[in-house]
Image 1 (cartoon, rainbow, N blue to C red):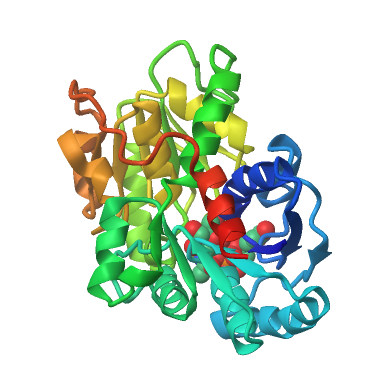
Image 2: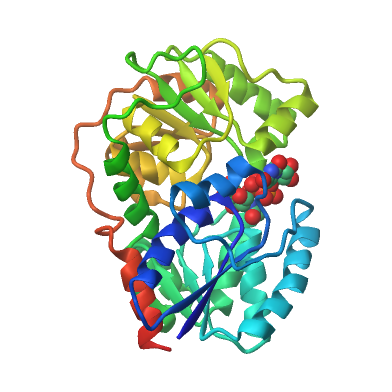
Length: 354
Ligand code: UD1
C-alpha cells in the first residue's frame, strides 16, 4: 500500500520523522514524501531531515512564502499533479499549517482518502490561521488520528466520532527518543549564556505576537527584563517583524540565536530552568521534558500541559517575570501524550484500512 505524506513546516518534519521510521519498518508500505516548500531556509528545513534521518523528499513543490491565499493556492496547483501521478491509498497530512490544508483539499477533490495526523486540536480562537486549517482539515478528512482523549472529545462534539481513532502523539515518540540521545551533552546556546548556571529558552513566532509592533515591543521588553539569561531562538518571522518595527531583540537578559536543529532544541529545553514560547510543540516538549513553561497566548490546544502549573498561559507580557521565576512544580506529570508508539499505531491504522 502507498502512503503519501504532505509536509512543509518545521513541526511537520518532526512528526514525519516518526512516521517515516514506522513506515520503513513495514515491508508492505511504500512511503512517498512531498515537501511543499513552505519552510525553505536550511535552518528551518534541511537540518531537520538530516538530524532526524528522514529520507529526502520525493517531491519538493518549492512554493516559498506569501499571503495565505497565494501560498495555499500555489500548493494546491502543485499537489494536483503529484497526486495524479502517485494515486496513494492514503494521503497523510500533519497538524495545522497551510500545507496541511492544501494537501487535504487537493486529495479530497481527487477522491483520494485523507488521514489527518494530530486531529481534533482546538484553540477556539478563530483569529488563528492554524484554527481554520485544523477545523477544515478535520471535516474533510476520512480518518482522524487524534493524539489525546481531549482531541477525541472535540471531534465527537463536531459529529466526527466515527472517523476518529486515538493513537497518542507522534511528537512524543520523537521527543523522547531524541532526549535520550542528547542527555548529558552540552546544550548549544547563543553566545553569552553559561549552561552551567540557570537559563531559560524562548521562541516567539505567532502572527498575533509578532505582527503588532506595540505587542511585540511589550513582549521583548518583558523578556529583556527577566532575571535569568534567556536563549531566544529567533524564527525568521520574528526577526523580520522586529526589524520592520525598529525593535532590537538582543539586550538585557535576551541573547539571540538562529532557529536551532531539533536535537539542540531538545537538549536546551532539557537543561533549561524555564521555557517561554507561543509554539504549540514547544509547550508540549517542555512538559514531556519536565521544564516549566510560560505560554504567551490567551489559550492553548494542549490543555493537559496546564495541569499543576507545568504550563501557564500569560497573555499580558507584564506578568511574564513572575511566571518565569515561579518554582518548578512538584506534581508528577501524567502521561497524557501516549507511550512513544503513536507513529506505529498510526501507520498500522492506515494499513488496516488500505
Ligand atoms: C507556520 C505555520 C504555523 C507553525 C509554524 C512553525 C501556517 C499558517 N502557519 O508559521 O502553524 O506553527 O509554521 O514554524 O501554516 N520564512 C523564512 N524562511 C523560511 C520560512 C519562513 O524566512 O524557511 C519567513 C518568511 O518571511 C515568511 C514568514 O517567515 O513570510 C512566515 O512563514 P510561514 O510559513 O508563512 O508561517 P510561519 O510563521 O512559519
